[in-house]
Length: 262
Length: 295
Image (cartoon, rainbow over all chains, first blue to last red; front, side, top):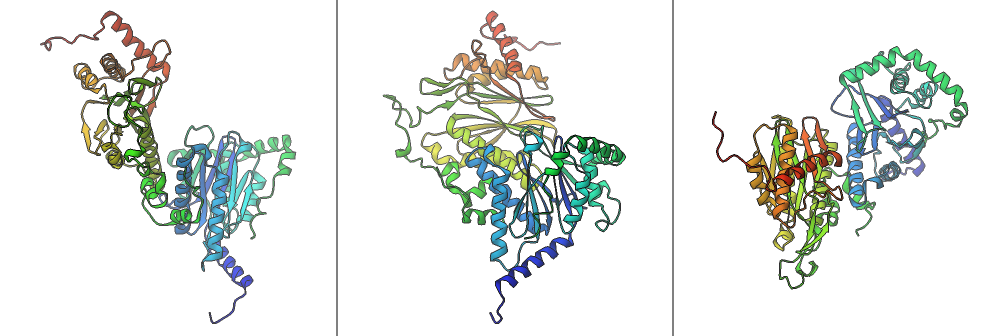
């Protein structure tokens, strides 16, 4: 090495590089609702997914470079399937998977010249809404345990701010979708109206036996989007009554922006 | 048994570019988890039954009879609930017919321990492929994967630890039910109309031959399979009949364009009880006409 670069500077350069890469892409959001967890990502492709199933009750959402998070997704499915085969299906948990991803991303960040330009969320749907788990893992391997909703991507903080305004415990699915779309189309974050063909939407449905992950597309998505748009006022009203009843809970929610900076 | 696969080597294997096959992945990264990796040499086998001089492993629990038949909307698979170890009944409520994915099912006969593991790996193989590729394998593809797994046990089979599956599913491309049988060497054969495997299969197949009619309705097809299982249990000591006193009835799986469905015990019980009630009158079952009725 002809030049000396201090470790601090090397890490900072890598982090800046990764952050810049992530900021080039669109944001995605994950929101819990009364009957499960909703994933919404702007994605013009219907084949190259940003949201996918990992295991029975666990899903994966990512932003950043496709080849890198696809690699992480495949690795996660292999990890989860091996664990479930070695032990039992209920022994595969989002917490275990999130820790493993953190190790993987952390060692890639420190050991390789080029860090992964990705940010991922691992979510597991529980028996009740307060048992839902969401972990956000950033390019350097830091993990944040999130509650209620998560925003990912370059403008995550801005998106999270809108989500926070609209989010309440026990939203219905169309209200949750309405909140997600409002957040994703907030100023400076979108080229205008988002329609069904540009959206990738999936849920982990609490009530489904065995495999909870389902994609929502085509007619069903159009229908939900219609409800979300027309029910915008209704959802707001529902949120208001909800918030009046559980103001203390809302205050206890940790801010989702906290875990961002490494 | 086995290490905890959190280690660096395993993680590296997870991140490597590879195929969408779970079995292939395990073979490369954690081979001792695969069924074929276990020692099956003579020393590893339990001794033959006392004074039996039978093949080694004969005293291990064995699954017995599985019956499958197609019908107008799909395919039925039923299995009796007995597993037999030598001349002993090892378990009277074992399940040997399983959902392999949304549009297929698999039944096993032979050494139960190996069979159950084979099914577990096969189910995971299909699910793993589906998750990685975003689409399911074709029915033909699933049948071929299963053949490879059966062949993986060839070493065990040569030493007497034989396990043979029966595979059936609804082929969405051609819109009908299909049945595949296997031999211990991994040979895969497509069967038409109906088939049966296991110790009571000879009797079951004789029964099916007389009772099966093409394009039956679902209910009729279930009854035909129940009759065939009853006939198998009637003449084969290793196959269990419907256990009315304990309310243990054969497992009935139905695969149609709506997907896989396992009948509840109550539903299966109704068919089983109807068959038993008929046999009270006619122990040999329905009497086939001597000649085809001419119109």
